[in-house]
Image 1 (cartoon, rainbow, N blue to C red):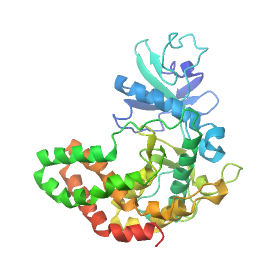
Image 2 (image 1 turned 90 degrees about the vertical axis):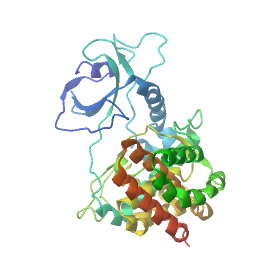
Image 3 (image 1 turned 45 degrees about the vertical axis):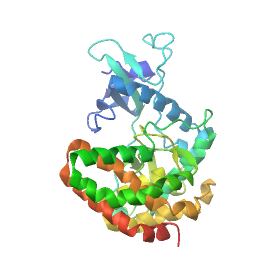
Image 4 (image 1 turned 90 degrees about the horizontal axis):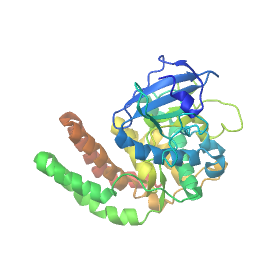
Length: 359
C-alpha cells in the first residue's frame, strides 16, 4: 500500500495506524492514515468503481475551493483537497484518461481506485453538550455563508448536486413508506400536508453552493477552552473570527447547487435530533443569528429574515433523507424516533420561524 502515495507525489514513511479513520461503504471502501517522510499525515481512500465518477468531480470542485482566490483564505484553509495524480509518476494515468484526482492502479494486490487527501486532526464536539455552545453555531453559519460566496466565484459556475430535487424525493419516499409501513405513512400525512407549501418556499430562495451534508459531526473542530465552553484561542492571520473554531470540512459527496437554506436545514435538523430542546438552545441561537446578520469580519452578507422564515419547513423536508436511511436499514426504532421528531417540528414550526428569523 505504501507504493500508492508516490503516485500522488508524496513520499511515504509509514502507515499511521494509530489514527483510525471510520467511514461508511457509501463513501469509500477503506480509509487509511499515512505519514509522509516530512511528517505530514494523509488519508488514503480506496473507492468502489461506482464511486469514481463522483469522486473525480469532487476532486475538481475541492481543488477550486482550496484556492484562496475563489474562497478567500479563511475558507480555503478548511478544504482538504484531493491531491492530483502526479504527472511525473512513471505510472501516471494513460494518455487521454479523464481521471485527474483519482488514481486507477492496475498492479495487484492494490489494483483499484484511490484518492489521497490531507489528514486533518481535531476534536469532535462533545455530545450533547455542544447544543449549548453558541460559538459552534456561529462557526457553522459562517462556513455556510462563506460557501455561498465561494459558489459565486467558481469559474464554471455551480456544479449540480448529485441528489434529486426535494419535492420529487419526498413524493417517492412517501410512496415507498406507504407500501412497506402503512402506519408510518399515516403518521406522515400531516407532514405531507404542511409540505405542500415547499415548492413556493423553494422558489423564494436563491440557489447557492451547498456542502450537501452539513452538520457538526462533518466538521473538524479546534479544541475549545475551559472544557469547550468557550471558543479556542488561536494565533495567526488566517485563524481569526468564527471560522477559527474549525480545522477542516469533510464528506463533500453531496456538494452542489441547492436552495440557500438547504445546508442550514440539514444542520439545525441534526442539532434538534440530538435533543428537541437543541432547536432553541445556544448553538441554534448563535447559528441563526449569524445566518441573519452575516459576518462583517469576512464581508459575508446574511440571509434576509423573510427567507429564514422558511427554515422550519426546510428542516421538516430535510428529515425525509433520514427517514429514507432508517427505512433502508429497516430500523424501526429510529424510524419511530424520526416520526416523533417530525411531529415536534410540525407542531412548533410557526414559533421556530419567528425565533430563527429574529421575531
